[in-house]
Length: 231
Image 1 (cartoon, one colour):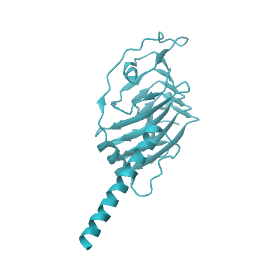
Image 2 (image 1 turned 135 degrees about the horizontal axis):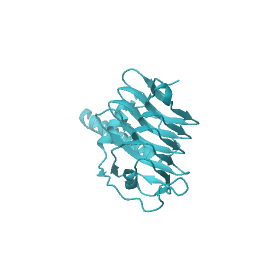
Image 3 (image 1 turned 180 degrees about the horizontal axis):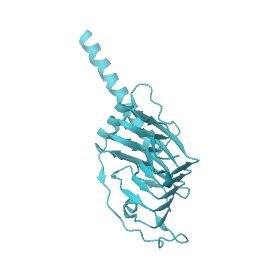
């Protein structure tokens, strides 16, 4: 009958939607080479669906136990919780791949840090906030970030980037972000806004955006949403 036919069609649509959602989630979580090409869903819907289906545990700070924070003997980071132990004036290096897939990660602002990804990757990063200045790092000032490769989904209001919401006097060298980035304005694949006085220029060198970037308003860019005061 027509009623049974409609029920069967609805069931098939639900099953298909679940399969699509699972494929999208696994592609972000496992950092496959599918590169997150989704033709049947708009980017905001993908980002929202991924967040709604997540059940995350708050990430807790863990003390870094290896290294002394100097240039010759940097602190070695081997767990996601140790990212929350970063402090001004120190050198850091990843010592393992980090998977943030089960954690609710709230990024912070850092000044005068040197951070080397050291050939490892950070995956499964899910950051969702109604605030501005959102990225794997909230803000970076007078810092050097090298060889950092992050995969995940970042959703916020404005000034959003895969690596950092805002950078000032900071170098990003050989860094990349893959996944999804969604915001209203000042949205970039790597940095939401470069905010520099002329005396303190930031640099982005040999970096790549591999993410789908979506913005509803002004200042949306593949690498950087907006550049202020820099040459």
